[in-house]
Image (cartoon, rainbow, N blue to C red):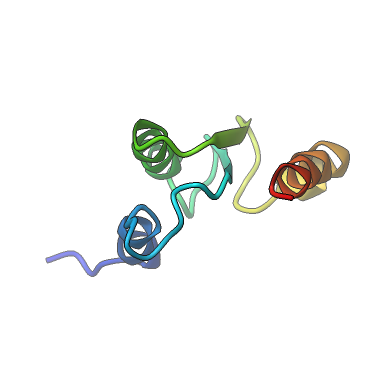
Length: 89
């Protein structure tokens, strides 16, 4: 029996519209090379959010490890975050 991970526990709650405002825009940052969070997990999650009508932006990497998008290209990373913040005003 597999032990549920943090991702297994939190992802369903983030698409529970009784808990989260569906009108809140989202930024998903992930990498195909991430060995901690498989890219399939955020991809599946963001697709469910999009199907529910959530406005989604994606910053996808192909070769960075977990949480390394900032290190690889900080300007691109912070620009995506800033655009999300500005759009939320």
